[in-house]
Amino acid sequence: MVKDAAIINQILDLSQSGRIHWRNFKRMPAKRTLDRENFLRVSIARKYPKKSFIVRDPMNKHQSYYAFNDNLVLVLAKNAVDDSIFLVAGEVTPSLRRNRRKIKRRDFDRNLSVYLEDSEGKLQELHDLVHKVEPRSDNLSSKANFNEFLSQELE
Image (cartoon, rainbow, N blue to C red; front, side, top):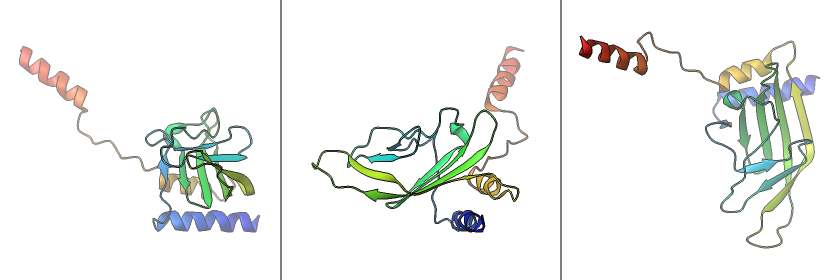
């Protein structure tokens, strides 16, 4: 348990310093695939990857993020059903390519860890850091401004 907290703290520190670049699933779909059921295989296309990255079906894509490295995969996801947060961290081991144009496969079962929210709230803190919601201004929205403009023109 202490080791798990240390890993989450290290990921939190690296995220605060800007060394981990998190990407949103909705705005920037991942160009790698991860096996939907057991996180066992990552396929990485060599030049023009076309497949998207699926973690879990009821995942809230607006509030879920991923980060890739050559040797590491991080997924910070929020469940759409009960708003639980989980972090998947694992190392990838490259396998040999058979052909230059084939998809490069990487085994994802090496040092795979799934961290769930604990009483300390570190995952919630990490999620709040990564998921920056811009506060809405007190001004009217553009649609309300347009409606106000139309009502003034019609008078």
